[in-house]
Length: 550
Image (cartoon, rainbow, N blue to C red; front, side):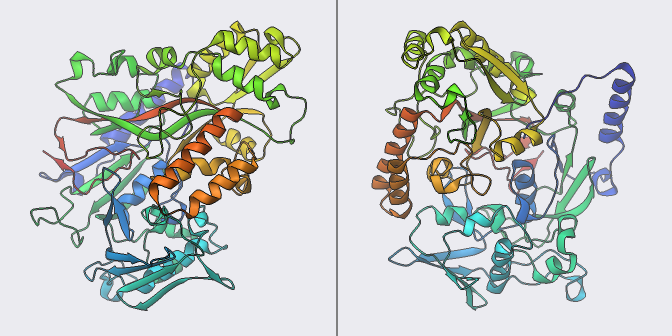
């Protein structure tokens, strides 16, 4: 999520500091004050709008829901599928029918709506209800697309429960990544009696099966989860999970203030890198500064997140030179990504000189013909497009949010050196998303974090039938050859053949240049020294059930 930074006058700053002190020092509860209780504390600058997994569309909601709910299957830190509520599964030979056998020791959290207030056992019909809830138009879940490939009989989706421990899904056609989709928080199991009782207010009364259960939420201030004593998973030594007693989440918007609280030890965990403190925390080579090496732990690995600039490709907007392929190619060649990463990102990430598929995903290939810094080639392409040294192009505008101004200003200067007249226009994150969805701007800053660990998720951004606002094709890229390869890849169950299709699509994208790939991100996590077992993963999923706090 992207948030604007604000300038404070003296009085505003005073009240900000007082608010932060009250937030971190005055919001304790009895369970937190008890000696011996282990509470994992982190800040969520982006805020949380809902604790209903049907609306877990961004990282803030996903992280919270991952502590409260479970799915049929789960991903480990290597992104390998593992059992969760489903202890095993089979896939039919033609790849269309998935049959899951459920554990019999999984119970919903205690809640007054259950008999005697005790959480009841999860059965297969709970998954039928939960999945039908996601596709229910009245719920309007943004996760509806997860089940696009499920077979339908009339208006009914092919979800069935032959008995309490067997759950079956039937697809229209084979789709190799489908099992990975079922690990998403959208696919969490929820109890019908609670979800229907609260309706839309289930967001404030979440009841799941996860390692923690809901305790209290003062929106914009503090959110607390408490250990689920009846959780079904155990560690390799047979010890019940989770180890922590509670999770406490605060919502300080100012990232510099949250960083200072982390430095003082009032937070246990910090994720990502902000321009406000990157040089204080990291060396130019992306290592912890010497003064913090004995204080914090740093976890870093490739992140399934591609950062890019997108061009609107269709005829919605007229009279823009950005519709000319050679102009888009020239922009791609015109700036030095390696220099950008070193000086603006402390080398956190990999320069985007290949395709759209990020480092860390099967299908990523260094042979993909992306773009490196070639200013002479950029000038040559501009001249061939009829705009020598940018003459005749007029002003082109790049729409961004303030969080990305450093990178976009850098690119702007490099393009000005090429002769282009480039304006950088700043919008609030919500307004920018709306303009992109409505195809109102020709050039915009974007990023794509994997929903599931398959390159198809990235390539779907350019399939012509996925035009926004109903799909993720924000550039409105349309290419018949690309569509044919995409449709072949979706139903191909042989991984090596599917990856070949992926690479062909990625090469085609780089030739047509509907985007400027900036960089492939890195997961960056900092913890206090007394935090054990947090680990890291390429999807940056926060899993706290195996965390210890010494």
